[in-house]
Image (cartoon, rainbow, N blue to C red; front, side, top):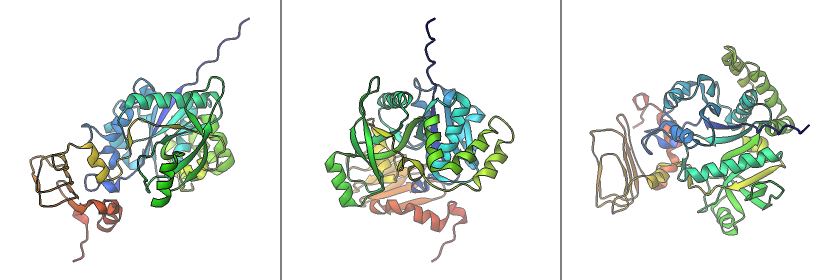
Length: 372
């Protein structure tokens, strides 16, 4: 009797959406972080993250992991997802816990050999078709061998705010997709000179924070490197689909280590492979980088909303309040952001310091304590 062919393992997409987006203040707030900002294409970034999966992952195989207080806003932004497709973490424990929880959910839904990708909720992708092709190849790679895949981005400048991975030789084998390289090592946020050396060498890629693996493969890595995290998420998984899930999350998360998946697992694993993501990736991490996606006037001012600039050059001007005019006269290289209750003005060179400013004044301008 002829053997029955193996059933193809289902493919799931997990979107991590726990960030707070302080660098997008005052449009972004703790209650409305960066993934809910709708300045790009008329809908929230998290909606873009789900929409570009069409044709690759069916909606019922999408999971969003976010903060518990952001679950209502996430449901409002993604009405097509069922209630159990949005998991709210009771405390922030960084990406290792989120990835472990998501992998447990995928194994519960699709079985231990289900393949999955870990994606982000607040990045922009210019070429969605190329993005899907890259994920499809990554899914094929991790389905055929017990590897964990990383999407590396070809560096376009010596960025000091990204982690890097050094790429080794090609991954070859019968039936394996082409274009994958072995990962030699991770490097966390190098200084400018080192980053410039990496870019010139051609051997390094930015770590995008996007991954692919089989549920069983990542669980094996957790068993080796973070067994306590694996046991905790297994205890949580016993409550999936039950009303007791919220209590289980609360109980287990209180004792979890706060650590990124890079430090906890990826930097220690020996079965990493990488694909270059050539699909126009941008983490739009600051107002300066966001300006590249807004219309520009003849003087290089990036403008969103009702605004006027005169004798001004190279500014990023964002007006989020309808019916209000923002005017910039005789100023260059500023970030100007206006909302109904707060206005930000700073040189572009200071835009990276927004986290410190928000920490000082608080998320809600009405409750800020000002020292004069």
